[in-house]
Image 1 (tube, rainbow, N blue to C red):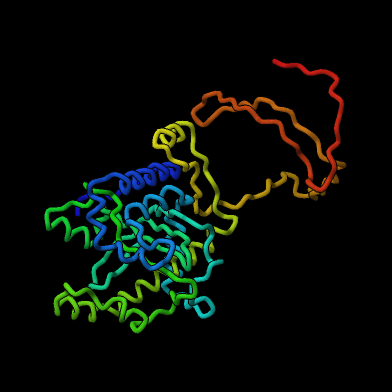
Image 2 (tube, rainbow, N blue to C red; image 1 turned 90 degrees about the horizontal axis):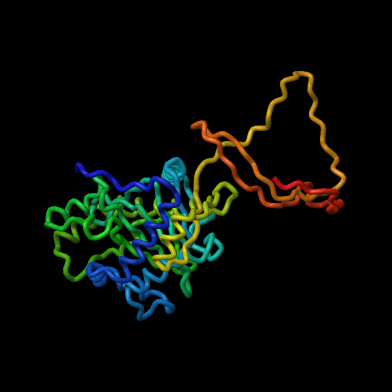
Length: 333
């Protein structure tokens, strides 16, 4: 209970976390402990039939587009899906996906109730387009003090955080056209009937918590759909890896290079004119013009002089022609 939850201090650091997960599923000796529990889920599609769980996850983690979702977006979407009733969008469709493969890292975990009534955390959501549908993979947060499944493992003498900070929690195969919203107990009765190893006490516990668990799953599904819609808007922005991060990625032989940050950005407020009688005028540009490469200097908040190079570019409205001008002289300092 006293452990501190894992944090990512910069959105670009998510690339490191993704690479670490790739390495875990490629080479960790602990990865095989998840196989028996989850391998059945990847056999639901023809494209994954016969694939090994570790290979399945490593391949998709290595090529998934990276998203980092800020807490303010998580709160808004999670609260929204708790009260929103979906009437026109109950099934998963191909056009719902913002990209074929995605890796969503949440700044803070969301919490669900599993079939036995236990609180579990979801820190990472990955999806992958398969032949006939999409696979949804959930990873929990091993350091989350609210995750009751992690507590049970610790009581058995196994600390999940020492194995991986993001244990595999669940894999859901969604076939195109599958109902994923407005779920009821009847939609899950067969899927969640348990395993042959479950005792009668286990089955009774699942029957008792089934309504709460199904409602929690319905909320999560709505959260994923809302998040997919959100990341396809113009609000998210991309951060390219800086040089130190690129060196670490190259050292790891990773193809990852950027993070899409899902956050609320402040609105750009136009500058206010000091003259109260000022009336803004539309500038009627005659054409576009070229700006050659030059230096830009400024003083940062610490009082240090900074300098950057502005690349050559073209300015002016895109629908106008470029006006080429002869250069009389060029002074280079």
